[in-house]
Image (cartoon, rainbow, N blue to C red):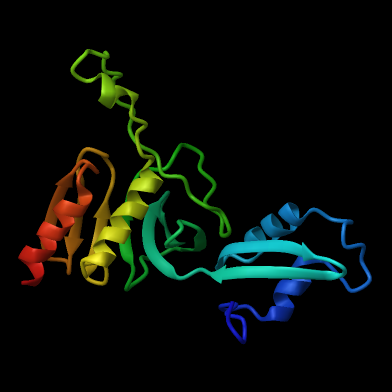
Length: 206
């Protein structure tokens, strides 16, 4: 929705070519979902790619460029990730100027450029439901990816994101982050993140 379109490191023509759609093709002769997935897989530096039709004869491509946000050590290499946890590239040495994400991945997770990561969480014993915890037991737990998005939003809102150097999510009951490589903030669980980070910002930034 910008003029010219913000296509990141790619040109508009590269995006068009990657879809394989040509002038004269049948507008309904392809799957827009498949073309969208094709763009995301072939263009690692896109976080969003949506192909749609507009009658009588137009194809629209909407994209959101990916920005390098995280680095994550995995199997002896370093993954460079976008904020949406898309693998942008794999490096043999640790990259600079990125937030280190210390988290778990499922066994056999796909980590090739273009893949989106789903974080894992260690399994915990299932608690027995009692009258005291029945409401809590029925409440669906946030996934690690959802917790990460919430954490990033709160850090950004209270002015701590730019200074964050490490995010630790190995255990979802012991979340923490490191600010400017010198101040360690222990958050515990994801409950009341707004209050916890607002309080941390008051202490660190005041």
